[in-house]
Structure formats: structure tokens, C-alpha cells
Image (cartoon, rainbow, N blue to C red; front, side):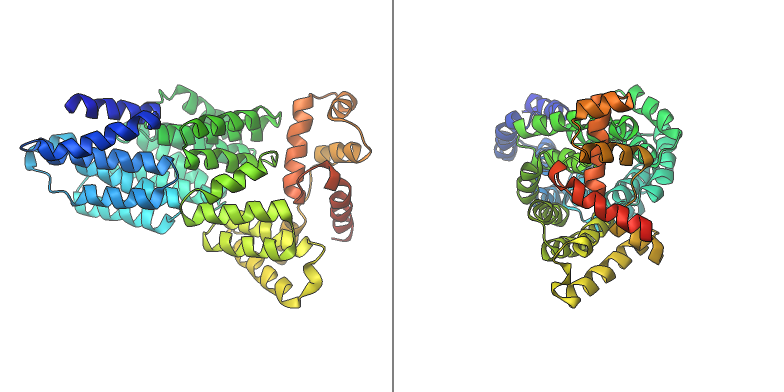
Length: 421
């Protein structure tokens, strides 16, 4: 049984969830037959590992019940050497993050620190990573970067949960999105990471890093890597990890897998995932009412950046004028989200409704509207086809459309708003 538990710990690192499932059930069945201190040890580890696996499989709420059962087990004093409380507490926080219960994740970490007596040197890095992770999920990347920077410095000295890679990847993603030179330092930190972590954390780190590469290079390679990450997750039925990769790709303007995004989000437990499912359906079918509903669900899930986009799309939808109430609710929601994002002015709200494109993006959009292919645009501007594709992805996202057939109309609206603003 001990050898099986060790193998399960290795499976947690490899992400071999199809193999882990049956073996976890065997350990849970046999742990009752073990005598002495090993019985609660094996059961506690197996429950926590099963919870970790179920988080990856998109069943975070069910996973939380398992890890609570593990936490309730009385561990004999001789089991202290195995750091069982830390192992279980970490997975309880992971469950909260997986379902989008940000406040609970923060409270769990704070309570553990207060009750366990661990030093700030040990605890600090994890606290920064959790706070930075939540800020990124909420779209507050400006708030996330200083938290993650501090986290990296703390984790260099003490990293018992192997969070350095995830922290570096998120810092790289945030810095790349802001166009900051520090992105190169965070890229080097991530590359130097030995990836000694659970697959649940490592897979998320890899996707954040790939998204950061796309933000820097805009050549389509980052989106391709995210697609591959999603495909790899799907092979293990890891819908949470699949959704993570697809959500980052969608944020980069890629709508090529919108149907799959909607299905994966709907199949993943938690308020965050279900709000994403609503957002995906709104992008797929359009309509002011759908965008408004998505905005409200995203706002409730505190995904403020996506909620602001949804409210902006509701206000820009052709059928927005059907009811004055709809526009009023959308404007109020947009104002609230912009305030949460530190963009509370009326001018910024207007920009959220009709985002501005860069000069290079306008060059590419105008050529695309004229009917030029990606290859012809690349030849005209002396850039690569992948760069053209990457810029078009971003333009689609900014304009709230799904492809070239909508580009001319959306570009005309955006140009008109820019000229009158």
C-alpha cells in the first residue's frame, strides 16, 4: 500500500489521472485494514490526492468535500513528520481557487497561517501567489504584478508547495500584457524553474506562460500552444485545465474553439466556470440580452474584466435599444466593473465599450476589410503570416466579433466612435 501511495504522488506530478482514479479507490478501500498510525496517514493522503485530481477534472465542489474529510481525520503525533496538515490545507485552497471562490481561498490561507504557527518566511510566498492568482482572474493585472514579484522573491528562499513556476508564469503573463520590460526577467525565471510541482499547478503555469508569449510576439504560436495544452488536458478528461487554456486563448482573441469553450465551461463546476459558459454562449449567439446576462454572471463571479467586455458588447449590440432598462443596467454594470478595475472615469467607460486599436492593428484591419488574405497582408506590411493572424485575433476580441465576416461593420463602428470621441 505504501508503494501505491508513493506511485500516486508521482502520478500527481505527471497528471496521469486515468491511472490514478482506480488506484486511489483501492487505497481508500484498503486503508481501513491497515493498523496503527499508517491508516489515517494513507487515507488522508489518498483523499487529498483524489481532491486534487477531481479539481483538475473540473469537479472542484466535490473535491472540496473530500479534502474536508481528509482534514477531519485525527492524525497521530508520529505522522507530523509527513506534513499532512500542510498537504491537506494546500489542496483545500486549490479547491476554492478552482471553483472561483476567491474570498474562501484567501480566508483559508489566512486561517491556516494564524492557527499553524508557521513562519512568514514559509507562508509569505504562497500568500502572494494566491493573491496574485485571484487578481489575474479578476482582470486586475496591475494589482497582480507587484504581488507576484514579491512572491517570487519569497519563494526563492522557501517554496514548500513548489509554487515558483506558477508565480513566475503569472508574472510573465501580467508583465507581457502590460508591455513591461520586466517580462524578460520573469521569462528567465520560468525557464529556470525545474517544474517540480503537481501537474495541476504546472499545467496552469505552462498555459499562463504560453499566453504571455503570444502577448509579446503576436505570431499565433502562443495560441497554438494553448490549443495543444487544451488537447493534452482533454486526453485526461481534465476539464478545468482544458478550460484554463481555452479561456486564455479566448482572451487573446481566438474564437476558433468557441463551441468547445462553451461545452468545457458548462462541464466544469464552480461560479467562475459557469459564468464563462454564459459568456461563451453570448459570444456565439450575440444579442444584447445575452451579453447583459453574461455580464451579470461574470460580475457576480468577480471576473470584472470579462464582465466589462460583456456589458460593453451589450451596449454596442444592434438590438440594445429594445428596452431602456437593459441599457441602464448594462451601463451601471460597466461603471461598477470599471471602478473595480481602477478605470472609473466616464472616458474610460466609453473606451471599454469601443476599445481603441493600435496603428498596426488598424493597418491590418483596413487591409483585411479590403479583402486581402493573411498572406497578402503579410507581404504588404513585410511581416509574418502568424503576426497577421495574432493581430487579427486581438482585433476580433477588442471589437467583440468572431471573424472576418463581421470585421467591416465593427471597424466602421469603431472608427466612427473614435472620430466623434
